[in-house]
Image (cartoon, rainbow, N blue to C red):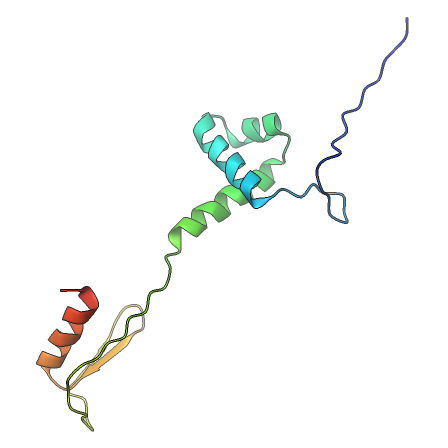
Length: 117
């Protein structure tokens, strides 16, 4: 009786200098989506797909963080308020912004521009 030994070679995947397989961003997205839809534990899914559980956990974490980041939007605000050497109002918002205005009408005008009212 002869013993046959087989080895699976992955020729098509690119590897870094340490020999680790390089996975494209599209494939990472595909794997994370597949994991979320699979109903499997992270350990089960990563074993089935042939990736390390820690690697999958990192990809899931990074994808969830990307969803939290919203694009920054800027808008030019033109106000018909005369230049004043002294501010009557100065508001410091929770996000760190400082809003200065000469009077309540200027604040209302600014708020109507920024909220799109």
